[in-house]
Image (cartoon, rainbow, N blue to C red; front, side):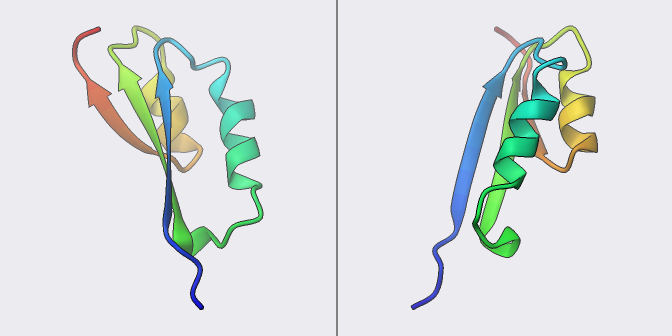
Length: 66
């Protein structure tokens, strides 16, 4: 039996300071890296949320309004 693909969505707004710890925990999960995707849904942040998430390896989806 193959391992199912899992998508983890992290909603975030102005969360640049919290994302490193959050994403580190998610990337450390005991799940095959090729069978998971981690998406940060950036909800109109005014800080570096999107760039921090991208630099840590998450896929970023931006919402332009709150």
